[in-house]
Image 1: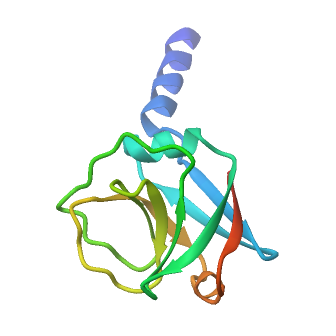
Image 2 (image 1 turned 120 degrees about the vertical axis):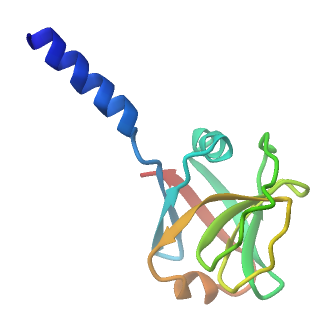
Amino acid sequence: MIKILFSCLICFNFLLGEQMQIKLLFDDKELLIILEENETSKQFYNTLPMELKFSDFAKKEKIAHLPQTLNAKGNSTYKPQVGDLFYYAPWGNIGIFYELQKANDDLVFLGKVQGDLEILKAQKGDFNVKITKE
């Protein structure tokens, strides 16, 4: 009976899975991001920890070029939202939208920022971000 209960518990935990969370650390601040359950997010998660240089792009997003590209294809059904962490396949970069952006077939949704985006939006010029697993 104990073996059956233990086996059920293991299966239940496997089905629920661990939620992938990461932390962005910059300028004595931090942002938590909950990653989406998809292959591209898992690839990105498995490259951590890393430090990247972010910059502003189009006054709508903060972006950084990854040292290695991810194996990903965009999704035409993805509608970008403020606070989304994304991967842009043609350039091999990640970014976070702090203003609304139009849909683009080359974008892959990676996760959602939990917290105050204003601290990210307020960063001027290039800035370093340490990204760690939470």
